[in-house]
Structure formats: C-alpha cells, structure tokens
Length: 108
Length: 115
Image 1 (cartoon, rainbow over the protein chains, first blue to last red):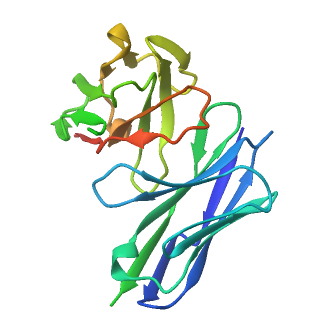
Image 2: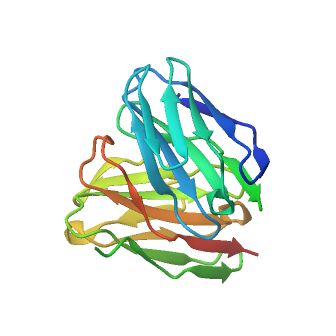
Image 3: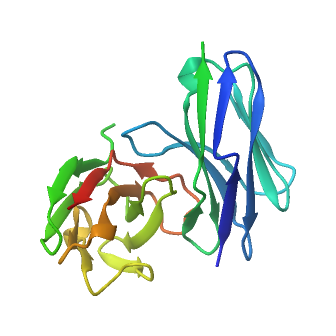
C-alpha cells in the first residue's frame, strides 16, 4: 500500500522567514507526486505535479522538488496569505494517496 | 468556469440515522471522486467513477456507504446507518480522465457531525 508521511505537522513562520516542508513516500511505481493547498473550510487546491526525480516547479513564492524518496516544498519569503495546510499526494496506479499535511502559519 | 458544487455544506445527525450528499462536477469532467477527510488527516478515497461506472470502491465501507452517478454527471453518496466515526468532511472532486495524471478539482466539502 502506498504511504505518504509529511513533516513537520505544523510550522509557524515570521513573514519573510523562508522554510521547507518535507513529503516522504513509499509507492510501487510512482506516476506522479502532487502538492495541494487547503484553506480552512475549503477543498484542496492544486499547486504542482512532479513526475520524475530531479524535477522542479515554481509558482510565486513556492518551489517544489522531487527525489526518488521524497519531495520538498520550499516557501521563500512567505506572506500571511501563504498560511494554509499543504498536502502532498502520490499517484501509484490511478488513485491518489494523501499525506496528513503540514499546517503553515505565517505571522506578520 | 463553475467549480465543483456540493450540498449541503453542513449536516448534523444522530447515530443510526441516514444522510445523503450531492455533488455536481465540472462540466465535461468524466471522472468523479468521493473522499473522506477526518480532522487532522489527509483525504482518503472512498470511490472513483469514470462516467457512470465504478473504477475503484475498495475503501468504501459497503455495509453502510453507497454511491451512484446516474447519467455520468451528478453523484450522490449515502450513509445508512451512520456511526460516530463517520464524522468527517466529505469531499467531491472531478478530473478530465481517470488515470489520475490530471489535476483534481475539489468542491468545498460537506462537514458531517454524527452525535
């Protein structure tokens, strides 16, 4: 069974203080790794898909990277509006298996 | 473009009662998913439809949960009878194809509280 572990569970940052979130996974035949953002009371919102080790993608202050065993989501100079829970999910056969998420709080 | 619609947004019931949730996916999306998200956890897939056929329902507790997608568009998820441990947010999502490579678009969810 596919497994996804995210760390830390929670992260409190000062505005402008860069940091990284970790997603380690075990999957038989990775077809894709997804990052989603979830705001309180809302459904997850798609951020990135990574398909192979070494791949990187960026969007505003977020950058996702992928190795054979883990993925990182780097937040550079975060702003309060980046506060959310960030979910990582792996695609094995055809279904997504999600991690529990990292809740990021950015203080002004 | 309209997003995934779900209703109701909130529901409170007593254990052993029945409840139903409704989902309308994005127009043109052939694949529809129902997820259960318990507080503090990531979403867990309950059932996946491709048009009106079931692709995967391996994690659906079939003794109490049922789902259908008539005419390959709207879908309903039913719980009968509900248990305390069913308290969760039920998320509906849709995507263009069933193999998972396309992003999934999620609705706002239905928060179910079972007392």
